[in-house]
Image (cartoon, rainbow, N blue to C red; front, side, top):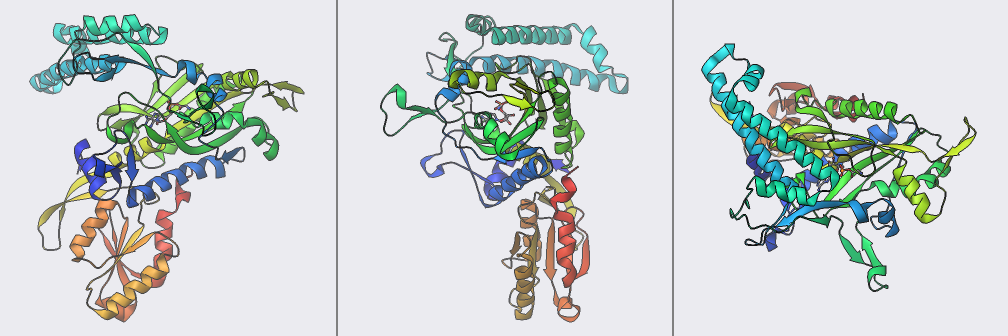
Length: 514
Ligand code: GAP
């Protein structure tokens, strides 16, 4: 069994109707993607898993669906107008634009790759006796690479948290970083670039009619905090959850759906008493990690990563990183946002954002711990975790390979495929269609008679269908069919009337709610 590489994963997503490039007929729109028939089913299942575990499984969390457009002052109060920037740099020769910090990070990755290459070579040379950690501190070449890496990392971190654009440019010059596409080192200065997309209200011209497409869903929750609290009679601590689109004019848009300009977030703001933020921060860190693990994601593919530089609103922040095919990267963020957002909205709107605490008999602006996960990143993590190539031995004893998407059955786009052994055998077809029409009332199922059974199995494996039901001649005599398990390839004869409950047991989301 082997994990599929990133290029093959992207090709698989297209070939099997999971993800297409947006506006492909016009050569596509960079960093914007469309979800195909199986992709949208899988994405909906991921959203359902998140929504049910967040909203339905907590008495004190409720959901909302706020508008994408918000009053422009929202973004002034939230700090996004002034501080939601990335440092960009243009190459004067190629006219290409880059994120200055990403150029430095890419350079650091190369330094680290050199260190790792030396370490791997030494591991081969010394065999079982090799002590990797010791070698890092004693081999001058490896130590040199690692010291250089750490030095750049520290200087980059300092420049980023101080907003020191000259320092960032100095680092690029000193390291002689060249345009990755052309090799030119003819750079402009580093400038701040605001990531919000703007558009215009129909009836107001100029700056006054300027609207932003929300860069995070969280603000729709903050401005509705009291509406929700009053109408649902929630008491602190309580949370508000939301799934919705967000938009960012990313300078570096690459790695498929990892960094998009239009994407979807699943966010929950948890409103708490000031002073309790540390405790709730730890609570949500643990709860969110459990949520990921319940899907069967191996622990070693997930890790916490504390933020080096905190966002303008946070007093603590951690990422849950997933081991994507291109390395460990952020999948979800857990942020202790203090009372920054509610206080800012209170100040700018002039409306009170306070909660009256009946136990303390006093009013205060609550603190907030947020969990925020990108739905598309979760989709990419799920696909890259699930897609595998395997060698299998057929009934004829011959070996062949199959691409199989080992999704948790609760997430699978299609729960079961019903396949008649022969498509021109009327009685088999009728029986298969009857089973299909019955099961479709409960699950998303497929009927398929367009090829040999072997080919149909492969196709269902590739889209992650956990069960294939084959209707053969024996079925006509005893009303039993074979059920093939996608992962074990085992086939079991099952009475037709037991199919619904057998599938339900395996695909029910209930089992994920830990
Ligand atoms: N409300 C907090 C917030 O928006 P963030 O770390 O900027 O925090 C949260 O984003 C999550 O949204 C990230 O962990 C990631 O999963 C997702 N995300 C952010 N930018 C994205 C992009 N350009 N494309 C896809 N997903 C993105």
